[in-house]
Image 1 (cartoon, protein in one colour):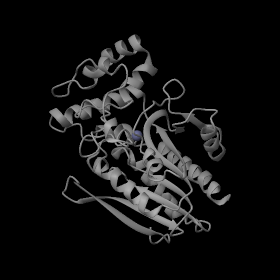
Image 2 (image 1 turned 180 degrees about the vertical axis):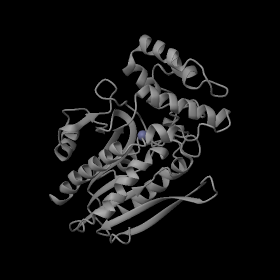
Image 3 (image 1 turned 90 degrees about the horizontal axis):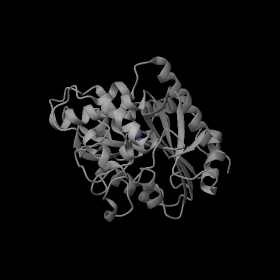
Image 4 (image 1 turned 90 degrees about the vertical axis):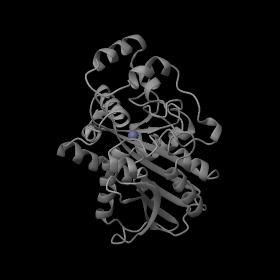
Length: 332
Ligand SMILES: [Zn+2]
């Protein structure tokens, strides 16, 4: 960051890496000290998914672009869930999915999506991992509910099973809290903010989708579309490979900057089939809570394909998407 002309801030968290090392969220800052417009690029909200976003950020540093225009800043939020990246988990040190954790009030950490009861036992099978008819159970559930409904019930976020998948927590976790406080402190003068939050594991292999929590046709959706073009889709299982979720990380920025115009997109890079990814998540979670930890690299394989073609595609689209946001920053 300093070689590229920026300033580095470190937001430490209490959790440690497997070797006992300290962990932190790193913030690279470029441009105006007190900006009115900001571009925020985010990696690692989902721990193990963070390698793609971090690679895009390193590439951006290497690209050595000119400084942002007057009153503008580019901010790299490097690994929002450093515990998950270090331990190769998707969740944080409290088994919390940080992209379901950012809710506006403490009273909202309750309940589960419609249909969750029907998939609860399938998702959180007790005991050690091993052969347990995953495919047959999965096909039976898809046949009964249809893939979009099932996808929503599974991935929509739940607040009832603390050791289960897609658990949103019971209050705002330390990492997101530090980010929110930092945003309030440093971005108070911002009137326009655009965020790009990079994830992997959803959608077609080697391609990306830009997803927003807005309905197509609304002014908010169209405003983001003018920045990123046609490739934008809604977070909805019936309209894209995604699902509706509460407590998304981008919500923190809306909460911290209530008077600013905040646009947040999730950039999802597809890896493998949804059932393969789910199977890995389920197996890793089971092994973590009930087993010997043998599934440790399970998630790395499905979220970070060892394939140069996939990695080049990620870097290419990552650069292009930041480029579109950069143009927006320069257009005022
Ligand atoms: Zn993710």
